[in-house]
Every structure is written in structure tokens, then in C-alpha cells.
Length: 172
Image 1: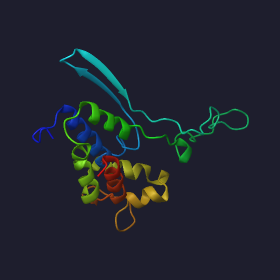
Image 2: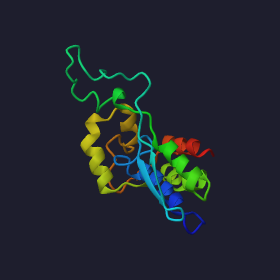
Image 3: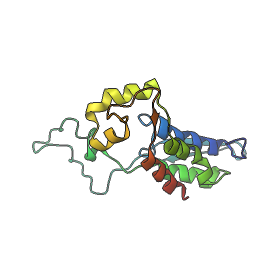
């Protein structure tokens, strides 16, 4: 990114989006983040809040039973645990206000890693294997090998749907 005329903000976008592909358990375009920015030329600090937001139909008691007690794991597992991702908008804002390159250029590494695949490391293997029973069918389809087993270190993980999503996010 830097060799191609980008700046640190462009590099941060490239790294963040690529981590979304290769380290989905710790980063993700389906999640959120914060960016603390210091501009030396103007001695100005800024903060971008790109955290997830609750869906419009969320309620304060949606994780409680009829007696007002928390329903175990409901806020952690399943559809009701989902939020509206903030990271794509945060990265787009960062790009539009601080970047030097096009958004498409900064997301290119992530797009290629998802489209062409990457070699699974032991950390991803461990995370997939430890969470396998919690995965729904769609997640199992993504993180399984051709033998329908959890993907293993050394295997190639291709994520065509994620590549299409990255392409749509980038505007290409």
C-alpha cells in the first residue's frame, strides 16, 4: 500500500479488511471497531466510532424470559446476537476523509485473499475446531474442507461469498 502511494490510513484499511478474511474470529467486516486519529499537521485528535449497532427492532428485554431473567447464551449465540456491522462504514469514512488511494485499492488484498484463498494456520484451525458444535450449517459450509470436516492447518480456505461482499463494499 505504501509503495503504491498510499498512506498509513490506507494501510490500516488494507490490514483491517484482510484480517477480516484470514482471522475472522478476532476481526471482521461483520463487526465493528474504533479508530483514534492524530493529525500532526493540525495537532488535532479525532475518534471514529465504527461499532456495531443494535437492529431497529431490538428491545431492552429481548434477552429476558417472562420472569425477567436472562435467557442463557441468547445474547451470544444465534440471530438475536447479531448487530448491524459498523466496520465497513468506518473503513469507508476513514478512506474518504484520510486516505490517498481508492477504497477498491485498499480492499484489494482482502478481496484476493477471500477469492483465491489462503493457507489456514493453527490459530484458525484451533478456533474453528473449538467452536464447531456452535456453528450453524452456513458457517460449517464455509469452514469445512471437501470431506465436510472442520478445516485444518495447511489447507486452503476460499470464501467466495465474502469476496463478493468485499467487492460490493468497495464499490467495484
